[in-house]
Amino acid sequence: MLQVNFNPFPVLATERLVLRAFTNDDVNEMYRMRTDEAIMRYIDRPRPKSIEETFPFIEKITNMVNNNEGIAWAITLKDAPTMIGHMSFHILMKAHYRAEVGYMMDTRHQGKGLVSEALKAVLQYGFNIMGLHSVEAHVNPENTASRKLLEANNFKQEAYFKENFYWEGSFRDTVIYSLLKPYTE
Image (cartoon, rainbow, N blue to C red; front, side, top):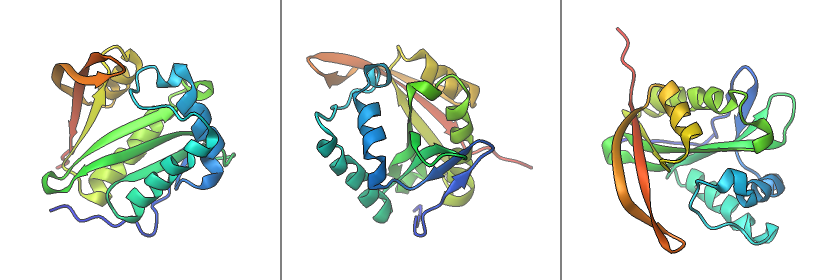
């Protein structure tokens, strides 16, 4: 079974980014992103009604990491500590060496290749440090940007589930993408 330990927290760095632990200082950015309809359009999750409702979400992330049940990074630019997005392995299937990846990026920073840059670092960490065998992503079929991101990073569509998710009075479809650990000779 997969054994993970996120203590100390693994800070990741790329050419333009730092992926760090969440803090309560991220609450304003998290609230803004989770209430921005352009960002949340394809994310079927409750929106916080106030900044105060965002603190428990950050606490949930912190507890997940502290309990080694998953890991989430706040994404920042190297030259600025303000969170501009986040990425996570929010579901770990330890018995199967598999994780589900999720991500979100502030609209002001979309279209610059930053999510792809962060994803590469997170996948490298997941496969090489955590010991994952595969990573999956659940995507709303209408989210073409997310689908293109995954396909550009060698994810393959594994499944298309019709009306498998109920949200706000209607059934929604889900596309499952997967990436197996790359093997090198």
